[in-house]
Amino acid sequence: MIIFCPNMDEPYRDQQMKEMDKTFRAILERRRSIRRYLPEQVPDEVIKRCIEAAILAPSSSNLQLWEYYHVKSPAKKEALVKACMSQPAAKTAPNLIVVVTRHDYWKQRCDANLDFARKVAWEEPDDKPIRASTYFTKTIPTLYFDFLGIFGFFKMIFSFFVGLRRPMFREVRAGQVLTMSHKSVGLGAVTLMYALGAEGYDSCPMEGMDSRRIRKLLDLPKGAKINMVISCGKRADGGVYGPRFRLPVKDVFFEV
Ligand SMILES: Cc1cc2nc3c(=O)[nH]c(=O)nc-3n(C[C@H](O)[C@H](O)[C@H](O)COP(=O)(O)O)c2cc1C
Image 1 (cartoon, rainbow, N blue to C red):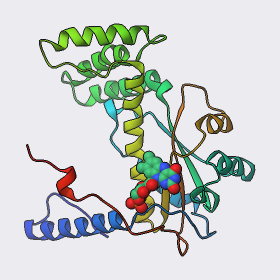
Image 2 (image 1 turned 90 degrees about the horizontal axis):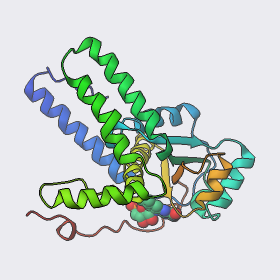
Image 3 (image 1 turned 120 degrees about the horizontal axis):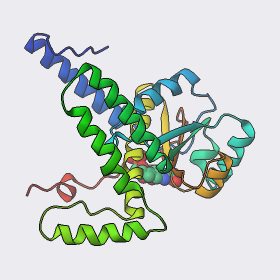
């Protein structure tokens, strides 16, 4: 086990960092999208630990607009497999987790951040909680609130004109703000998959699914959006469909 301690001796710390990097890279290399699983279930406690890891992912404004549904009821699981177009990554999977973007929870999550900032105010009496308060009572509501796209339209005009003179946030329309929420939830999803990998389990992210049926299956309101479904378990022979294809770094990384 690697225990990182910032006060440890420098050479020892370097050695620890190298080991951490090796472990991290092994986890990255190990993860492949698995389309055929063994029947063995992922134990509940493993799933719980992986969710605890997933919620450590960063999120925009720390709103944490994510929810994870481990579908355990056999009837619901069968319906979920169907909603995932009965694709092999879902059909053969012992466990299925639905990753949900709770875009509709932005107000509650602002309040949770505010409560936290107020609690911190007792311990750190500087202006941080006041700044957090303005941020979560004015800035974020201005960005997230919309009605039939009308406010979004005016926000876009406003941001265009202000943007002529100074850098200005541009993604202000309802669809763009929803994309922002999905981005953060995707970071949680990938963290979950790497956490499963670190526990020796495999996974496959799926967006080939009927989000509407899944939302109904989970009894979720319209404001909740299905981000993706993650199947997990242990890979079976032939579970990896082919060698990994990645574009060369020179095609995707630029120094400017
Ligand atoms: C957002 C997202 C959605 C995906 N949807 C599906 C899917 O519906 N079915 C599937 O078999 N694989 C799906 N994949 C897996 C990709 O096909 C896979 O990540 C890609 O081919 C690279 O292979 P690797 O994951 O083994 O490195 C999805 C991946 C991502 C990130």
